[in-house]
Image (cartoon, rainbow, N blue to C red):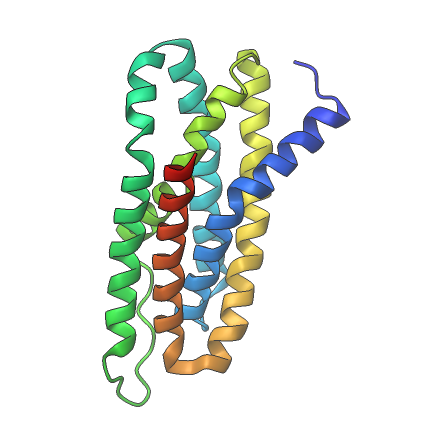
Length: 195
């Protein structure tokens, strides 16, 4: 394993690029729950960071074992992301449009919803396995770790920004968060279909 400055910097930049969808979803989660505790912020950022670590490693393993099956699955990635983010965003949008009673607090983000968000925003990172295919096992692990740490830091920032804006937007934050998730799903779908 050769941890040069260019290796580290290249993977940080790759992590930044991969984390943009997770950043937006983190911001939407912060919008939805402006009173979120620090534990919730770490849970959200940790989930996104974990899947941004896992997916490139799964892609790397696929390249080195079952590449023909992975390339067939890659065509489904935009559809999966669109479906998951559209469903979650639509649910948030509907919740935001319902009249809220005074003093009603935002619902805490459930484990299942967070899992779907993390998978949907990191599923395109599977293709990073092709990018790092020439790396050895330890270098691929290091690259995935750098991507995960970068994603974690960016998502903490996203949740914090969302919390600040959510406090100002009050009850309409859930609507904005839902719209953001739907738009991210559409963006992932369109950008993958154009390639």
